[in-house]
Image (cartoon, rainbow, N blue to C red; front, side):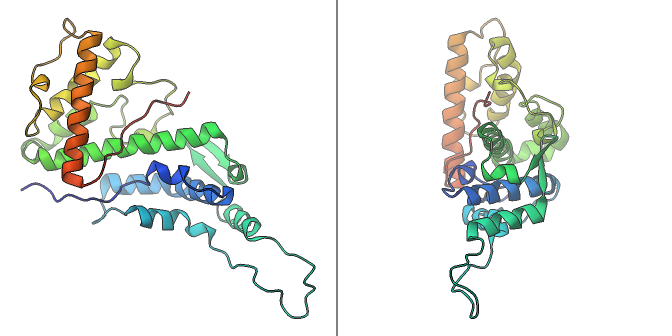
Length: 259
């Protein structure tokens, strides 16, 4: 029997970090995520929760460090003209007191700097969420559709899944240095794309109703720019449609590395 479909999100939707309009909310979201990131990723990689959080729960959690009491009316005996710190200022103090600094790919980031986060850092954090979402959603969908392959050869099939992505960390690419260029299936050269696209192609061939184009093995001799585009277009459309059919929502898809 295939495993049950879990329609929540293992990780925050990348759009959550793009959505907050108030700077202090953005600071709180990023700070909370970076503070819990290593522990949470290690947890979901080895000991899955029964149900993944839905977007609203992620939003509530990421904003949980922002809760402060509002100013309200001036207390009796106090001069109403003397204004205390604003709610926004209180939130910033709360975040600094809670964390001081957080870490992202081996680099310390001060919480104070996240009041106006560097654009390059925000792009990298968002890119990683897209990448993590894609890695683990692909795994969840494959566990459901190719459950017999996992049952027959757990280690071998997991190695096949991991071989789609460069590096030695498997799906937990967050534990390695941040890449400085597009890699794997998004490499800038055909010879760089081929081994990873071939593994993705091999994985998806085990799913029901895989397009005929994906049944033919890829070889260096026949792998041209045109062939690469055809296969990428076909495999992407098939993956997105298949994911939506089973999960009832669009998948998280990878993006180019922010350079």
